[in-house]
Amino acid sequence: METWKSCVITGDLNEVPGIGPAAIKRLSDKDLPDDDRVTNTYQLFGAYLRLRGPDDEDDQVDSFAHNGKFWHWLQFKGITAHRSAVVRAVAEKLAPMFPGLYDPSIYESDDESDEE
Image 1: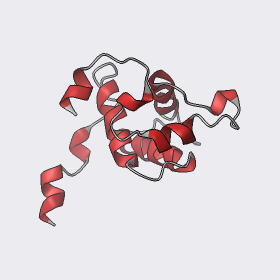
Image 2: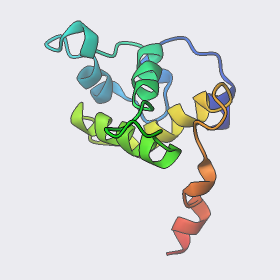
Image 3: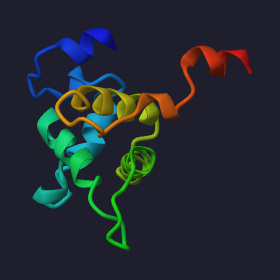
């Protein structure tokens, strides 16, 4: 994850931790309307950021809800594996550019979840 957070983005979806060939195929399905297709990393970031908008009551979406919305968006797109890894990767990559976008402290650390 540290390498991902500091690497230069090329646009290739393969560079995103958790994204593999099956996910790329589902995200870029040629049967989808052009506006719904995600064919590069920048579009994936755009999809993530778009979900940060206000909810139905025009209230600001907090970090936890935002990441949940992105997780469900990936599920809707047919991504069946590593959704949480993709959410975390995108959130952590964008967080330095958008302070307050992602708060990792609201999630259990990997160490804590291993103890249960």
